[in-house]
Image (cartoon, rainbow, N blue to C red; front, side, top):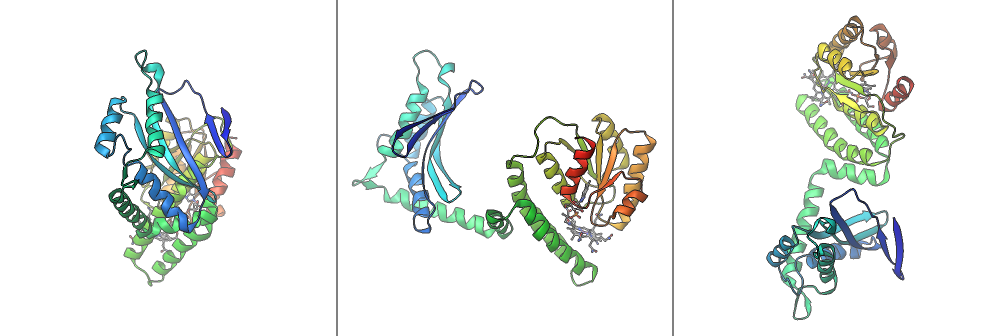
Length: 341
Ligand code: B12
């Protein structure tokens, strides 16, 4: 990778690679994220991407991109720390794969240059109809984000909190409260279902963030089989365990929920998994957990078993023949380290 300063505060970064058949490039500007300019910057790139002086509308632009062997060019907008980064990204077939004399990269880059420097104008100004429709699009986009309160709340929390702190400090206590209300007859199944939906929507956002961050180790590791036991459909906790294990480099064979003991045995054998993780959330399904462990032992599967779920205790885990009990997702990683390394 090379980085070259073209002029004050303007840098060209080049990352050469033989790996891809497409060239990808972008031109981006960074500005401090400020409430009075953030909307205008976002609007600017969207309006500029609607056309250029030479290709003044989406139809003309689309036709030109088709002629460039289906090149792609569009606005990009993101937040990086306290800065807003905005500009354009483009991709086109790498010149190596084109007939001699064709220079797609240069033509696509020229088109991007036109978006910045020779935009579609009307009476010497950016077109008002483009600005109006892009403003309406942005407003709709923002409303759709804010309207999904579950996802929006999770995103806002993750701006300042660590993902696992949100899981342990907010999601689990909230679900515990809903569960306690349910048990006490103060809440009912619809509330339980609604709370689970909210937790799952929030967790999707958390999962994206957890998966994106670098894990502890990256060397290939033996797989771990995970399942919620037969008769039990609670899988939020198991899914959190899965993401964290994957984040630490352990491949996970996730058998899902309500899983027959025989299916766990079969998967553990087929994948030669040194560790099987079982989840149960109800007193009524602890029997299935015990039965699964019994079958693993009877079939002489060479694996250790770790169990978890709010209903379990370390003592009970030992009683049903588990090798380990993990009270939360973090502890499941400690167990994996101990068993697999
Ligand atoms: C959400 C929820 C549901 C959702 C589940 C959605 C889903 N996809 O999971 C829905 C609405 C579907 C549901 C249904 C039912 N539920 Co429910 N539910 C809950 C609730 C409120 C939260 C569970 C949860 O997700 N917690 C959050 C997660 C993150 O915590 P966790 O699972 O404990 O996981 C953590 C650790 O335990 C550990 N861990 C978990 N699994 C594993 C596995 C391994 C290998 C390891 C290492 C670690 C590990 O790591 C996780 C992360 O830190 C609990 C109450 C509670 N406080 O637990 C009741 C609760 C479990 N449900 C209960 C009941 C009774 C039911 C129903 C029978 C209700 C009904 N009448 O239909 C059905 C059961 C259907 C079935 N056959 O399974 C009871 C069970 C009572 C009992 N002790 O037996 C509870 C305890 C509520 C209560 N207090 O009465 N439920």
